[in-house]
Image 1 (cartoon, rainbow, N blue to C red):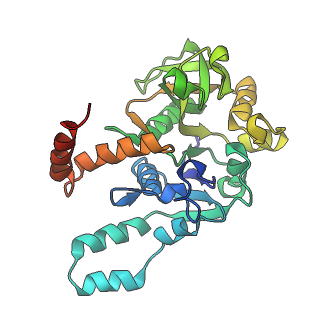
Image 2: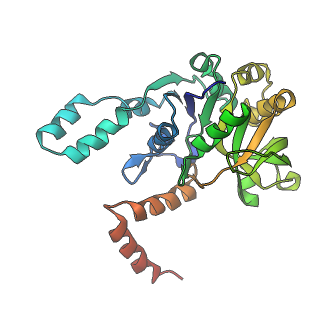
Image 3: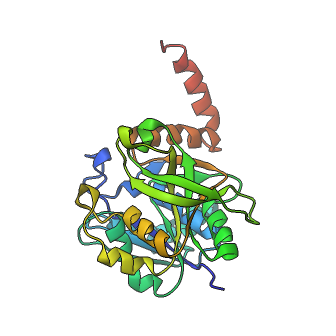
Amino acid sequence: MKKIRKAVIPAAGYGTGFLPATKAFAKEMLPIVDKPIVQFIVEEAIASGIEEILIITGKTKRPIEDHFDSNIELEDNLRSKGKADLLKLVEGTTQANLFFVRQSYPKGLGDAILAAKAFVADEPFVVMLGDNIMTGQQPVTRQLMDLYQETQTANVAIMEVSDEEAEQMGIVELGKVVDNQVGLPVHHINNMVEKPKASELKSHMAIAGRYVLPPEIFELLEDLPVGKEDEVQLTDALNKLNQTQRVLAVQCQGNRHDVGNKMGYMRYMVEYGLSHPETAAGLKGYIKNIATTLR
């Protein structure tokens, strides 16, 4: 029985939804109060028991590598000034066993995952999208890994979304229920459609940015023609995989925060700020004050 040890985090997109802020650095480095988006993803991977993490970057993604590298000068400065709390925060960004590879030109999620082929080798692995922050009692990635340990089957996290959201996501048409020991609603998958038009929508269950995949996915991705939006679509490869070995859909426990668009980013900034010990009280008071001025 194979154990999942590796995670792949694609972070090579252009981040056009946040231009001009993302012209010179990755959208995944946008801060949520005092922590960049990508750090939330890495922390989820570590909390799930992942041992090795590959971040797929692009030409403007050097800040991601620098963020997770040691900064001896900064650490020495904090240490000499007795700022132990800040030193702990900075050192915490270097604890993971991280690797990086560059995708020369963004051609879709499927193409980005292909860049991880040498890193993954012949092991099952997790894919964690960098614009979806998950919160909850147990990491969503851990839930998928637990199901894989039981079934040895590829799976994807799904969550119900609105009509508007569905047109921007990979939509899953569910099949029969699968009994399991993990205690989650699990289904076979009849079909997956990438960003369907409203008239084509047959389900409101969307892939929520977390996947457990077998190494066989790489051969399928290599053989795929360019799909929707002139990109190599992971959804197309998953449909092919589902024809030879089952891909399961898992309704995980937790909350998904789509920080890949301005509104979702702002919402989670407020939510996280209201739970942050340094900002919660002040932000709560500020929101109460401005709420009286809104009509």
